[in-house]
Length: 449
Image (tube, rainbow, N blue to C red):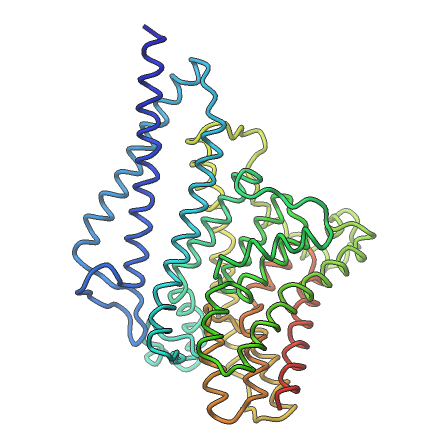
């Protein structure tokens, strides 16, 4: 009886496994359509003037079916797993398949999220910056807030604009923490080939700097070298394929070349130089010094306390030996990331907008380039926003300022640098990276004056 039951249980298990993935695809597709509005013809648009949500009546049953389907298939998988494990079935290979499948589905969903507006922009032949600070766009009535509160409202607005990418970043980061090398083999060594592996991993993931930072933090906490994790964090906003395609399609040739070649310099070589400096500071090792080795100064103790927030790893005692264990560990890890990253983003994005509010008007001079590069290094912008911002500046006769913005706006930001300082446990890494990005922007701007 037992021998006959096990094959039937395996068949049911494989069916439930496939259904879980199918319901996950349906849920993500429905959510990305709520954000982008491309499946149906008649949407209720929420958010003005920037659309935050595209709602259709069919979204409700799709969300209901996909949500219930995910929950029921997970519960059924867990029930069947108990019997299969008792029968001696090894589910580790299926666990690896699930990790890879979830990772691929999330990346495809991210590409859909970015690809739909990218295709619309290419067809239109233009991309205009939205209203608000540096073209972020508004999903809430910022003008109704008191003047002193508007920068904080702009910071919250930023999270509303990029909420979808933020969620995908947290889910991917949680998956890296839970699955580790199952999803992406850890690059061997700490040299330049390992660094390039981090760059290559970033190419198909068009995140802004804020959303790339928690993934880079997760990679580093999971054992990736500082070099490869840093390369991913900066190369994702600088070298993702969709941004390079849009730059090539919408910018004048020399600015498109600057965006591509400058992205390589910043995403590949500057990050590698920072990692080499970090290795030297740590006495020849890749990771920053441990808290016990640091001077007991007030700033060092504060940084150590802050860095402990970034201990995202799940207990090593949890064996990742079945799909349901992977699913629960993945969601728990994503939740641990969210508890730190979301409040940090709210505070730091509001701080960034307060700082940028103080930005003086800048002309097409060396001083204007310097001011633009300084403030653009601090400001967070959604992916591609640097392209219409630079295009507007070019049209206004400010090529030097536009060149500085093209390199500094996407690369890093205050939220990104704060996450880097905490996750990599080195304030110097964050500061040097920010300063080098700023210097690259100034140099590019002066060349284009």
